[in-house]
Image (cartoon, rainbow, N blue to C red; front, side, top):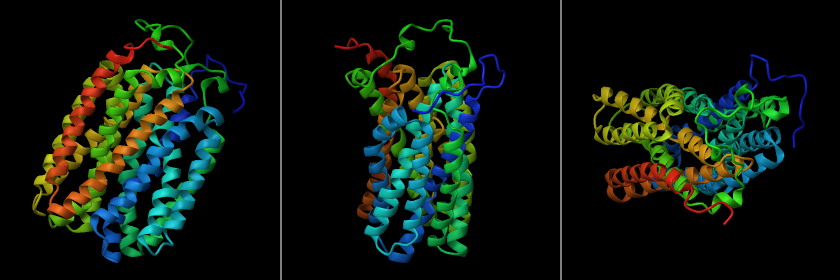
Length: 423
């Protein structure tokens, strides 16, 4: 474990937790810029190798299967070994996986290098472990803090999607992977030097405030849930179901959106630039959704975001001409709002329901179901497109998944006490 440091007192007006937020925001900016830029590599790889959309989507899906399988272990690693060691390792593995990806010659090689090795790095630095770390530092302003942290995903999309497309167009996709590897390596020292697992290591309390019960705060919200108790509780599995349907539809769009725009006749570099601006709306949405969820509750805000996500699917499905730039802009706004309401609110809800020292494992499990959904939906979209020549069936499936996710998040708090703890 990381050692407790002295020299800081609880009366300080400046709270170190915001340093944690800044480092995690930067890490997610790089990690998700790399992940979400796959949409431009997707098209470039098809052009060079002639792979089908299903086969090319499988590269991304394998990375998400790795994410699903390893996320709980990444959360447990965070609980046991601390943030500096865990996230530092993740940055090193991600950088190495991207370097390997730049040297591949076959579909299998890229699946192993990007899907498995880089996917492992993405998992260790993923949303679940990051949310667990932030949740240790914040309680009253948890939604805001996680929202600001997760806004890094939108900024990463804004910068690295068109950035990667520029590198591919002017150099090659191989050189683009080398550039991304360098970015991944840059965040390693920041994680190792600046991160701390909990406020106690700085002799602080969550939010930088004294440990006093908040008005209206129940005693249950201050319990220390153990992972064995959590997994026996029905509310936990409803949160997992919500996580499964929250990210999968978003990642389906992330992987296929540039191909859909190109099919409609948009010039590829222009479309990637427009799509990259999704990151602005995603970043803003993460912050605003976090603030609103602290004030009005996680569920109402999640419902608003879900409606926007479904509308984004409808809009992009109906785009069939490069003259429909206005609809493409409407799509990125709706997608940004939809994405900004997904991962941050589900992880915040999980942290609200099951606080304690097992937060890393809990949100690691949430991340696993994020990854499972993100693995299934992009591949399924590619497969159905190859079979049917359109995305209608998978959009219907994705919309249904969004609805189920909302219902699961709604019912999770009610089922939390269905089984007595420890039974």
